[in-house]
Length: 116
Length: 112
Image 1 (cartoon, one colour):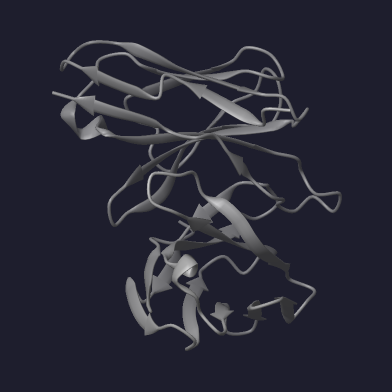
Image 2 (cartoon, chains in turn brown, orange):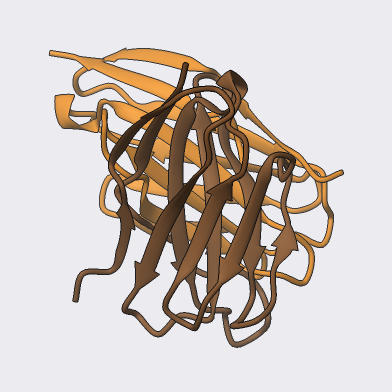
């Protein structure tokens, strides 16, 4: 049981290049997330997927696209990378609590992305 | 929009002392409040959480209190140890969803 796995762990991109961050979870969770973490800014939600086939914007979606390929996988794409997208990216998953409120979010190990 | 404010941003304590981190949230419909600990270079991991129908929850040396009227919740760590040194994040659920809004984090340093 690996939990949430994401790749790559480290990546350096040139401005204008594109790339996709891959994420998979083996906990049979319905909800999946992409967060970015910047110094002093905490964890900010980029995109969210409540179930296969659905996605929703978070706090900072501009410059990103996502795909919920199936229940296990949720990818994040940067179409034209910018230096402002230099960050640590965390994929995460959770199961909706029975009463409809939040539940424990499990994070992947993070992807360190530098855009030069 | 919804937001979560967290204070202080840094906190230094002597080993054995207590540490308190405070958060306020804006969405009165928030009903789930977890706390995450993140060690350097690692992923955030849940250490304790509380739901809106509970005022206080304790797990060994850590406890969380919730004041729904004031929209405040706090993390209390007693008898701090050097291994408690990390960044701590509070979070609150967004109304009717399992999405979380995180605070900006508190860097706790425990000196031997």
